Structures are given as C-alpha cells and as structure tokens.
Amino acid sequence: MQNADNDCPDALQRLSRFGTAAVSDALTELGLPDHMVSEGIPPIGPTHACAGVARTAQFGPDESGERDFGPLARFVDSTRTGDVLILAGLADRPGALWGDLCAAAAENRGASGVVLDGAARDLAELRDGDLPVFARGGFSQDALISSNIVEVDGEVTIGGLPIRAGQVVVADADGIIAFDGDLTNRVLELCTGSLEQEEVLRGLLSEGLSLHEAMSRVGTM
Image (cartoon, rainbow, N blue to C red; front, side, top):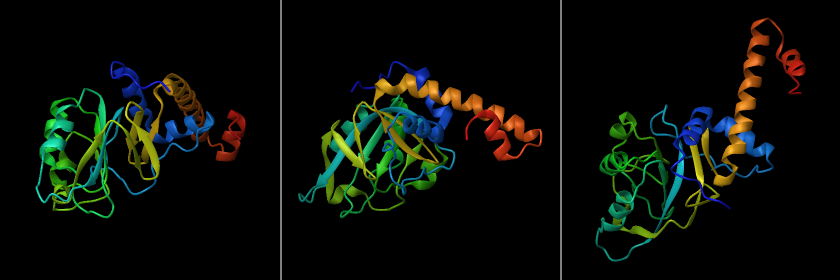
C-alpha cells in the first residue's frame, strides 16, 4: 500500500480537525473495521490531537547495564515535519520512553505528535506543552536502564494494532487510528459528507424533531 506524504499538510490538518470518530466511521464504511489502537493510550493533555505520518521505533531488551541515550536521540533527531513518532516499549520492562527534552527536540523539528506504548515522564511539562503526546501513564524512571531502540521505521504493534512507518496516524481523546496513505482522499470525502449530514441533523433537532425522526428524515437509519 502507498505510504502517506509529509508534503500534503493540508490533508493531514483536515484529518486532525475531523477527529478520530469521523475517521473511524469512514474506515468502517470502507470495510476496514480493524484500524483502532485498543484503549489505554490517552493524550497526556486532554485537548491534545494530531494527524501525521508514522515513524516507528521498537524497543528491545538491553542487558548491557549502560544507559545509552544515542539510539533514542538519533530517532528524535531524524524527525521530519508532520511526523507522528510511534515508540513501542516492552510491557515486562517498565520505564518512561519519553520526557520533556525529547518533546522539545521533536517539536523543534516539526513533529505532529508522539504515541507511546509505554509510559512518559515530566507529565506536567508535557501536559502544558504544544506537542501532543499519548502514553499509558507516568513513570519516573526512564526505560533505558533495561531496554533500548532496536529497530526504526519497521512495523510495530501498539495496543494490538500493527502500525507501519509511512501510514497515516490520527489521534485524539477518542483514540488512535492508523491506515494506509492511499486511502486519505477517500477518507476525507466520507468525513466531509458525514459532517454535512450531522449539520443537517443538528438543525432538525433544534427545530424540535426527535433524534429518531431527524435521522429517519436524513436517511441515516
């Protein structure tokens, strides 16, 4: 499948504005119901939302006893404008995959957001920052004491969903979605149609129609 293009920021911004609920409905209509990361990776800031192109990093065990920051720093430094950085940690090796210094560096390089299958630290700073970060929670000790990045831009599994580098990622308070870039225009068309339909429904509801009556009239039932 075709990867998404970082040179199409307008399409990615429109996806972010539509949000994951509308994008999820569109993908389901396209016959792709398995596009959601399972629950448990919320935004650190309640209004954090993003859409962009996936860059992936897989963590693996590190028994060296040395806290090597190099692989993570190189991954962050390779960020391109519009990237959503996806970091897959190890469930049996707790530790923070991300912190405020990583966020500052990624934001300066134009990252759209960060998704962690694991914990973060410096939550207060991340919550108040402009870079959307999604994580399973907070953990004060970093993960590099027992694990490190072993693969970049491969396929990772986040919350049961395989995500490949180059896919489109949309994330907000409702969830995290990934899909192939060649579906972007079709998804946008369906989201636009759904938004127009919702505006008609809201108008009918404001006129006093019941939800059942309004949906029957618009043809969504």
